[in-house]
Length: 114
Length: 111
Image 1 (tube, rainbow over the protein chains, first blue to last red):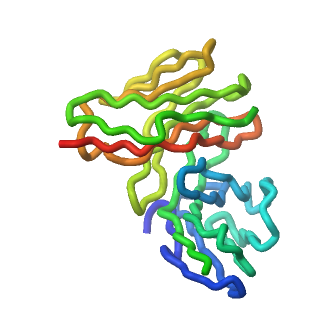
Image 2 (tube, one colour):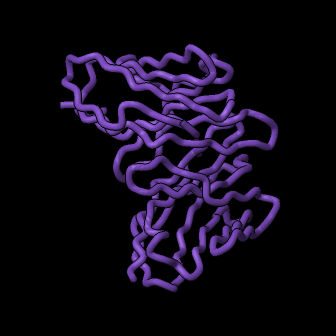
């Protein structure tokens, strides 16, 4: 596997379910991100982890819970979601260093909340 | 203001034509401006980026033009090809290291 991988690629869940999204980066980066991508809207940054420590929580509802057990893996735990949470959830990673800003994205998980 | 405004929302160009996508920002502290390309079923991928100390950057058929005084930057795709059909996002990096994205432009290049 190369780059940033995400599983599952598609997920349909009811409002009372609990599920988790998984992201893995094979690039040796030290920062990982969760973004939400909705149609016709800018990508919305949800969470940032630098060196496994959460450094950003962009006013995300508590029904979304991130977990970063090590610098290569990132999870997004989901529970009691709402239909408006249906979107493409993108994971990204980067090497946080001076003059290095490129973020590498995974293919995303298409989430549908019924 | 942390917004980046992108236009147009969608664009149709004939093969061989020039595609132009524009972005505007208000925060003068932004200091890195990348463009991302996203194909259906894929995540965004960095296409080209520019810093505010230069007015233009060219990589192959892709050029960023940057106007610091007007707080605007644009992506030009020369000799557009059907394979360029994708969604394009501009972005700006703020002082906290966060990328602020535009709304995206769906480009369709007709053969």
